[in-house]
Image (cartoon, rainbow, N blue to C red; front, side):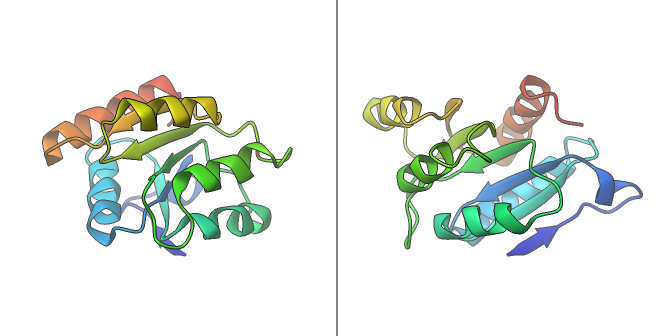
Length: 142
């Protein structure tokens, strides 16, 4: 698991957003965009869905939000979400399916499996920053 803590004081105690995405560029862009929201948010990244539950089981503090990609190599986002929602300790955690997909079938399946929200990844960095600011507001992060 890679940890990304934005520079500055107090981020170690900041609320955490976990990003589960097998695309390294997407993880880096999302982490950087959270820095540009100018909120004290620590971003923890995981490279595949099969890492989420084991990491949650051993973490010191649960995330305030999980951004979960759908298409990952070892365990996709749908299977990961299903496992998360069937684990009582973690079933309450807010999950936003954050995917390149804009397919309504993926949206409906995500929501049916218990995602709190489904969002298509924005096309450019400025839009990404804006979307992440909105998510931080919606989920009262910071």
